[in-house]
Length: 151
Image (cartoon, rainbow, N blue to C red; front, side, top):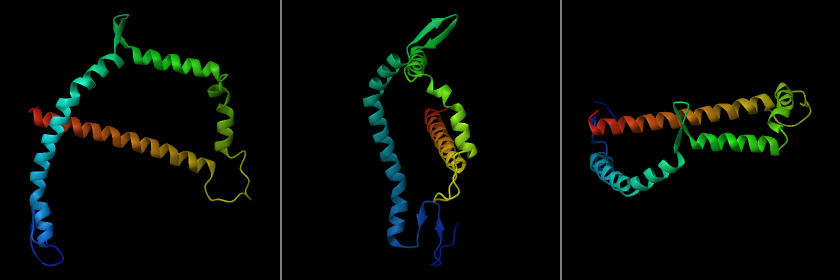
């Protein structure tokens, strides 16, 4: 039990602090049940389409006793094509990228407070944070599915 500012008692699912808040909290389980129904309806409608797309995109070819998804082959082919087409810029630019991050091109008289290294670390942390949140979201979704299915 939590004691709110006004001095009324609030329990999980029931809040007596204000009439508006109590109606919203009491309606939440009903809204959740309705959302589950909508979720199931959407899944039933789009599930077959999603499964068909998945079988095409992730079609696997057996090579050497293991299945190799063709999407991996396409990704490798695209990487090789653009590496050659752009004249190996991904390899040629390594030294330049390290020089930029090291500060070889920094001018102390330039306006701004963020260094190249700080900008790189910010972009990297945002990328890692986004990936982490997506992974945890997918894990929580799959855990929710497992709970609903009785696992």
